[in-house]
Length: 95
View 1 (cartoon, one colour):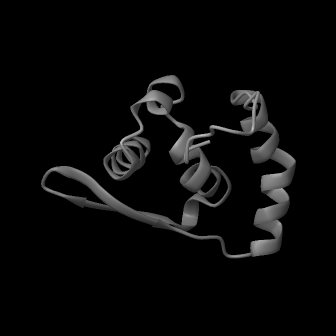
View 2 (cartoon, rainbow, N blue to C red):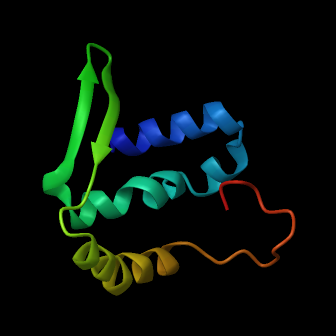
């Protein structure tokens, strides 16, 4: 949960997008980090300081099998979790 909070805070600070963070608080972390945490947890490392989590790095040992896992499990789960935007114009950078 701390990694998801860190992703949300970093994104909000950079883009000042509070609207999507309120509606979909896990969207950014799901997009950039969640699939690594779910499918390749042995290669996810967390950096902490005295204030808590302040960074992370993640990777996949076998890219082809990782991508197959994303297609088979992660992407369908995210399609179920998040609704598709109804219009393609006026999308925020998050979407």
